Length: 298
Image 1: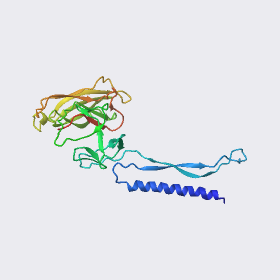
Image 2: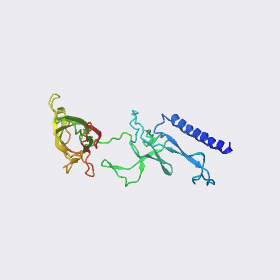
Image 3: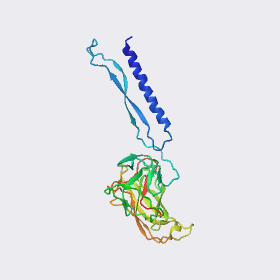
Image 4: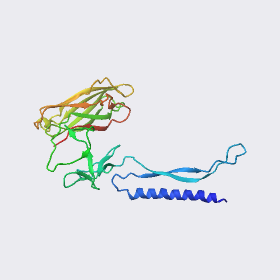
C-alpha cells in the first residue's frame, strides 16, 4: 500500500475534525443573542495530470483526499424573542444595525441595546447605535448617520394612523356566504388605540365584499350596541385568483370618536405602492400574512 493512501485518509480525518470544531462552536453559542451558525465547506483534492490511461482511453486520475474550502456563516432568520426591555430591538429579514466604532462604522445583528448616562442608545460593547434624523415621522436616508440619542424626560406625541395595509388570501373554495374576520389596531390623533375589524364575505365565484367596523363604545355607544361601520367595498378576483378592477385603494373614515380625537381618513392598502394587489383568492385556507399601520401612541 502506497503512502498516498495514508495521506488521503488523514486529510479526511483532519477536515472532519475541523467540521466538528465548527459544530462545537455553534452549540457553544446556542444562547448567544443574534449568533449566526457556520458550516464547513469541503472540496476534493485532485492529483496532478494523469500519466496513465485505461484500456478505453480514459485517463486514470485518483484524488488525494479533501480540503476545507472555507467556513461560511449561515444567515438564515432566527427566532425573535420578547425580552421585556423597551430598548432591545431585532431585525426580521435582511439588514444590520449600524454602530459607531471610533473612526468608522460597524455592523451587527445583535439588538441588545441600552441607554448611557448621557442618553445615547448603545450596544453591550458601548458602541453608539447610529440612525437617520426623523422629520414629521419619516426618516431621511439622504441625511448623515448620527448617534441615536433619547432625551431624558422627553416624549413623542401620538401619531394618528393615516394608512393601513393587509396581505391576505381569501379561500376560493368556500361556499357563498362564508365570512372571514381579522382585526388591526390603529391610533387616533390623541394616541387612543382602536380595534378595526375587517370582515370578508364571499358573495359569488370570485366575488367578495369587505366591511370595516369599530366597537360602538369608540363612538360613545354602549358595549351591547352593534359595531359601527367605518368602511366597505367589493373585491373581484379572476380565474387565476388575482385581484382585478381595483384602480385605487379604498379608505376608512373614523368620525365622532368618544375620545374627542380629530376625525381621520385612513387609506386601506389593498394595493401596494406599485399598484400590485396584496390580496389573492387561491384554493387555500383564508389567512392574513402581514398587517402594517403607520400610527403610534404617545
